[in-house]
Length: 86
Image (cartoon, rainbow, N blue to C red; front, side):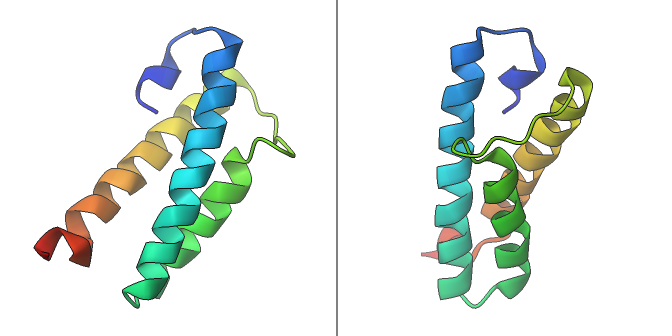
């Protein structure tokens, strides 16, 4: 996600959509399993926003902000998640 702020080949962004959407779905599932419902409600919209099947189109400047926000949310989740204690 951090690399997405640069001008890269279109296939990178398509692959990124698949990866972020999948990671968001998996993270929502993990958060639900760990009874962290706040994170579930963060990752469900993220999965929808980044989904590759019915893409949501935005300007490059908007996507830069969304990519950075999504990266920060993943980092925040990983640093506070209960699975880090195991």
